[in-house]
Image (cartoon, rainbow, N blue to C red; front, side, top):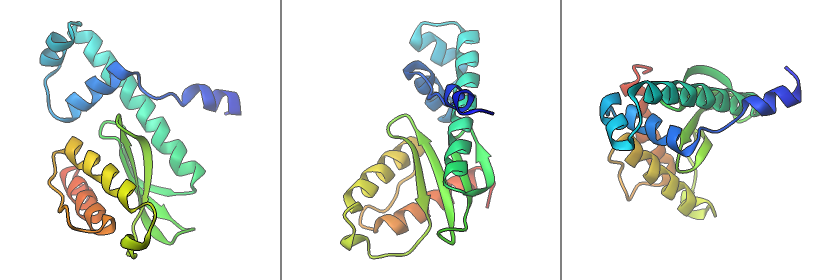
Length: 159
């Protein structure tokens, strides 16, 4: 696949596709979504399918660019798990309509000393809210991320 083909295939879901995708991930029925958005049920199904395909491509591309060896991936849930030989760590790739694609490297570190501490907390809180998971507010991002990602993997039966 050439660069132009790759770039054409790497499109984020539209705002409406994101809404439908997130509501379906949260178990809202297609008929309820269709009624709330004033669209047809087939439209909801097609938008969901397109969103999942786009999200899967984004996750795969992120893994490829970062040289992450994927073990599990789901466009339906916007979540991938793999291993980064470069960082020698388990790695998580997430998709969210709120912040797009994000890569998390499993590590233990002094989060209080990191300039990204507040940003990591913010993103983890948004992700936890989307997944409807209560994460400990006082935990450093590395511990909160481990708790959240373990919970997600358990839900997906990837444990």
